[in-house]
Image (cartoon, rainbow, N blue to C red):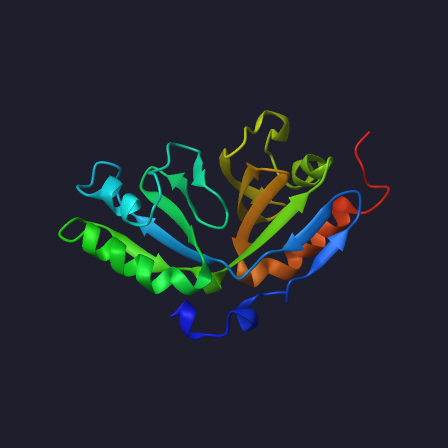
Length: 187
């Protein structure tokens, strides 16, 4: 379980950061649960409520990166909680969805999370994938790509949050660093 390990030891890049025309930083570790359940599953709204969260609408994230829930697909949600609270959140979900078809899995240690902040943070994100950053509303989530790897991105106060697989964290940090380097601004 995620909370059984020293939280500092699971950060993929040790809290790496870069300051260019935008600030890029790894913000892990973060507790993450992948919940697979169809929207009409009995108890789904109650399951989110048991965590103090609202069931997110399509392409939205409710709450914040510190504690929130994002819509990932018609039957998949990403639940964000403090790293030490994953076990309790899984237990709450299991109780609230007991008897309903679902799957809840701790994916905390399988993901890396980055924040891109600053006035020109959108330029960094725009360079990496086919996301219309200018039209991305606050708390709007997009599943897309960061160059050649799968990623989820959402706009949040002061910038963007990007989640990718842990196995490609160094690659994504390199992409973000190159995209945010001084002199690499878009015209």
